[in-house]
Image 1 (cartoon, rainbow, N blue to C red):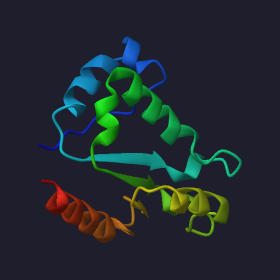
Image 2: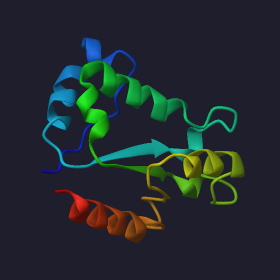
Image 3: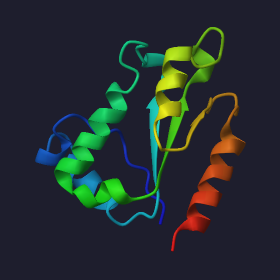
Length: 125
């Protein structure tokens, strides 16, 4: 099952916005792709948005953190030059989660994301 879930905001697990509706859909998926806006990331706290999502998922249902996941850092095209800054890349490399940087606008990194999705889903029992 594939579900496109709009961004989770702080407090989604308590019903902020449409958080509970979105979180219920996530429970039925086999893989989570965390699509984050790389153009808004701060080199001093590159994991801020990722951490917010993890906290919301854990607060709603800790089992969601056991689902396979991929981090997709989007909007490379808005960076100058269009590559992840070292602090951001270093942060995500240290995690035990596959990640890919991409630009949905230009298509850069999309093939790598699809390859990661395919290989991750094949590993699922």
